[in-house]
Image 1: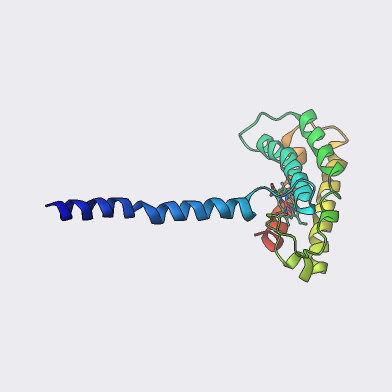
Image 2: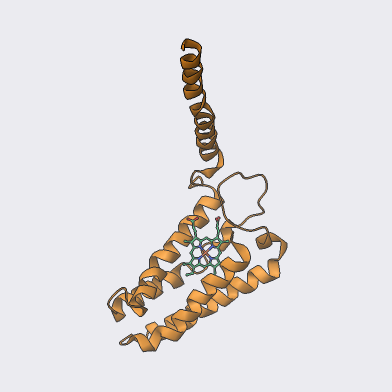
Length: 164
Ligand code: HEC
C-alpha cells in the first residue's frame, strides 16, 4: 500500500510544477515586454495621444448611435479636441531602432512611408471637414453624421494597414 500512496503523493506534487513554471514564465514575459510602454518613450507618448483620440471620438460616436443623448455643444467641443491633436502622434514614430517598448505599430509605418502619409492626410482632411461644420454650431446629429463617419473611417483604415 505504502509505495502506492507515495507515488500518488509524488504525482500530486509533480502535477502542479509545470503550471507553476508556466505562470512564472508568463509573469516574466509580462514584465519584460507586455507591460505598458515607458510614458517618456516615443511609443508611450504616441499611445497616450491615441488614447486622447479615443477619449474624444468615442463619445462622439456614442452620440450618433443610441448610446448617448445627442448634445451639439459637447459634440463640437470633442471635435475641437480631435483637431488640436491631429498632428500630435506622428512625430512619435521614429525609426524603430532597438526599442523594446510594447507597441502595436506594424513595420509598414516605415516600409510604406507614402501610404502612411496618405493615411495621415486622409484622417487630417476628415477632421478638418468635421470642424468646419461643428464651428458653425451643431443642432442635429444629421449635420455631422457623414463627416464623423469619415473621421472614424480614417481611424479604421489606418489601423487596418498600420496597426497589429
Ligand atoms: C495614420 C494612422 C492612424 C490614424 C489616423 C489613427 N490611428 Fe490609432 N493607432 C495607429 C497606430 C500605428 C497605433 C499603434 C501605436 C503603438 O502601439 O505604438 C494606434 C493605436 C491606437 C490606440 C491604442 C493606444 C494604446 O494605448 O496602445 C487607440 C485607442 C487608437 N489608436 C485610437 C485611434 C482613434 C480613435 C483614431 C481616430 C479618431 C485613430 N486611432 C486614428 C495609427 C492610427
